[in-house]
Image 1 (cartoon, each protein chain N blue to C red):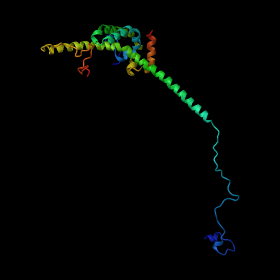
Image 2: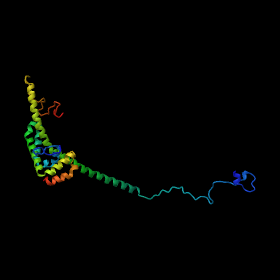
Image 3: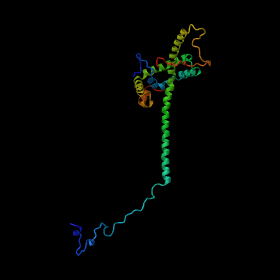
Image 4: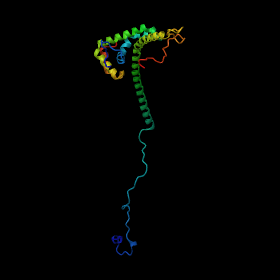
Length: 106
Length: 143
């Protein structure tokens, strides 16, 4: 699977797509992630943390769609490079810089 | 042609008086040959060699430390990426697990409906903590 989007244009959260946007996720979805992890630490039962999990999923999938709309070509290149090199950051520096120039981390 | 015919000397009485034909040194003898050791005492002193070697070692270890710093930064980047995407992966798995677990509980209720006193899906442990099911089949569609 070398395309980052499914039929309706939403980015599919494959490992390549997720690692490519990992820095953005870590920065912009940090509150939801932290809340989910705290809930999990409190009680590992999956049924108890479903709401927070849905918050996380909503945030991350929305962020992926947003990134894909803003810098489609750079993100596709970066995701393709990640897919080719199995999520090795050091082998995709060029594509990473191009991606972060267009969609900055701020 | 015998030797006597070649090397004869006039007035020779027997073969034993023939002039000598030997391989010998040239007149005046050979030139003298040096066979004494000549190992010079010049060159770097022991302290100089020691300092050079330890200097090279120290510089090499410094380069190793720099390289380790770079490698640690790369590993940190990888681990930070994994930490960032852990929650969404866990959330997706939780959703899948909850739906599968509900189906399993219905199946269990169906199978055990005639057994008196059976509480469906009760925790087999008494600690109160949630434990993942240990049926040995984590994801039957995958395994």
